[in-house]
Length: 132
Image 1 (cartoon, rainbow, N blue to C red):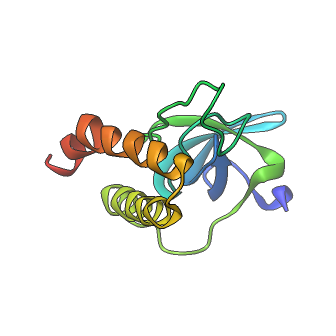
Image 2 (cartoon, rainbow, N blue to C red):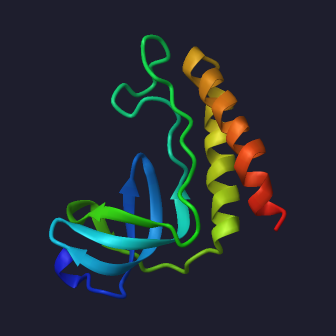
Image 3 (cartoon, rainbow, N blue to C red):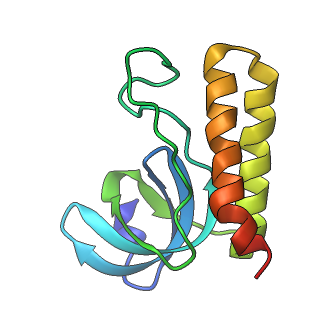
């Protein structure tokens, strides 16, 4: 699968619980250096090593990577992307809204805390991006 990927390929990869569409810029042995073009899945909130835990963990606020931000995508988790690339801001709004809806439907401690962190991200970062 990764044999089809080369510099300039448009790919889908997951990174810190988010899933992104991007362009491959460089081959880095076990990784591809990828420039973010859009978001398919907003990163989960909380501790990546203790998913959905709220007590006894550092509950992190995880914002989506920015447009054109670079990431090291693991080759084994990277595949060619064949669809139309959505506009970055539209993809951010869509992925945010999807996660927000999922968290509201949970009605548990994790959902409430994650929703609080997500709202903080929206207020602190995303509203500035939307209103450019």
